[in-house]
Amino acid sequence: MSEETPIEEYPILEAPADGIPPVVDTPEALAETRRALREGQGPIAIDTERAQGYRYTAKAYLIQLRREGSGTHLIDPVAFEGGAPRADFSAMAAELADDDWILHAASQDLPCLAELGLLPTHLFDSELAARLLNLPRVNLSALMETALGLTLRKEHSAADWSKRPIPDDWLAYAALDVERLVDLRLWLIDELQKADKLEWAHQEFAHLVAHAADPAPVRRDPWRRTSGLHAIHSPAALAVVRELWIAREQIAERLDRAPGRVVPDRAITELAELVETGKTKRLTRNDLRSVRSFNNRLAVRYEQDWLAATDRAASLTHAELPLRHLPVDGPPQPRSWERRWPSSFERFYRVRPALAELAEEVNVPLENLLSPDHLRRLLWDSPDQTTEEAIEAHLVELGTRPWQRALVVPVIAKSW
Image (cartoon, rainbow, N blue to C red; front, top):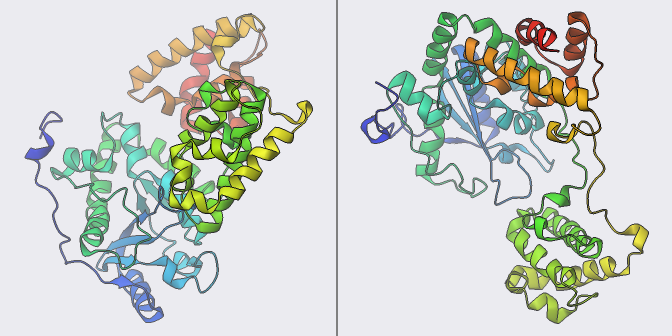
């Protein structure tokens, strides 16, 4: 079937081949699942379902596993927490360590799997494989269409998976997400071999495994990602955003509720705009109640928290107010280099087009050929003279994989 075939012309996987598996939520059922998986053959397809947009954390609320000779298993990890923040499945991970774990977009699932001790030793990421093949669409449904002539429904992808009991139609959807991953892996391996890119994929997958347990990077001033912040410029109004954001985070964490379901970002910036426009310097209860979202039942319950936050913002000294812009941490965007680093500016606009041409030649997206961040860090404030060895050493330090360095180092050196 061609890529142009409309989605509705592909047969839809409607129900799991073996029916909807029961949810594994007792020690006896988990022991049986572990036995079945141990006795199965070949790679293990794995997926998770989270409740982002509903809950504060991004923990897994369902784990789907499928293996030839074992069938599909749907594990409720919450049932095994036993009062701890997370269940511990490290013993099960050790039992499954010898074979590939197949995930789609592994970087999305690995953090919540790592929290459970489910760390792979060998990994196959079907999305990343598709990117190395430069396929036009790499979401799971699109790949199923291209590879297997089938498609998946995605109506429950954004559901609240913390709901108990999980509805049967949700469970069917979850089981289908791993139903044909083994077949998809075989097709992708064949395509990677034809394109002489299988070794590239192995290196990428090994990199994912090596960093699967890495802690999430700590973001500086995460409140600056508040939607609508672009309209806030004065330090006093930014302080209102910051203090309300912190208060909301604390409430959301206590309630295990997504912050946007306590009050949305836009409510915070709307309130800060009263300070931004000079209508007031110290926000009052009436100001708070003038913003619609602060009047919902949940927000009203924490009205004293919001008022305390705005009082803190109003009481800050000039030195304590947030800066309008964070100091640059690492290389700025190359478009800003021209004045302070003119040689690097010119070098970037020689090297990047050369790499883009190389990416087209080897049929890989430019961002997979070389991370934009790695390129920026390599070229920012760079010396006028260098060698291939020096470029190679810098890229090794940044974590660039061998297959990437073999391709890009000569091109970068030539365009330097």
